[in-house]
Length: 82
Image (cartoon, rainbow, N blue to C red; front, side):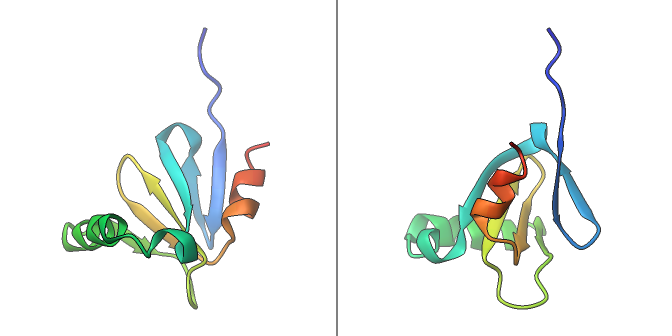
């Protein structure tokens, strides 16, 4: 059976395919870990970070191809899948 693909609007004109999303993370709760900071720094050095936030980001979305910072709260993003 073929899996249905949905899309997640993450802010601005950016829409991500649900089958590429690895996780949605809260900036306040996850960026205290040295492992998360290391991961985000490496993604930025590799040119795989896209900042969609006009102000301070509330969350970040990790996909197969990169990391997207967004002002939309993680709970709101997760709710868009339901």
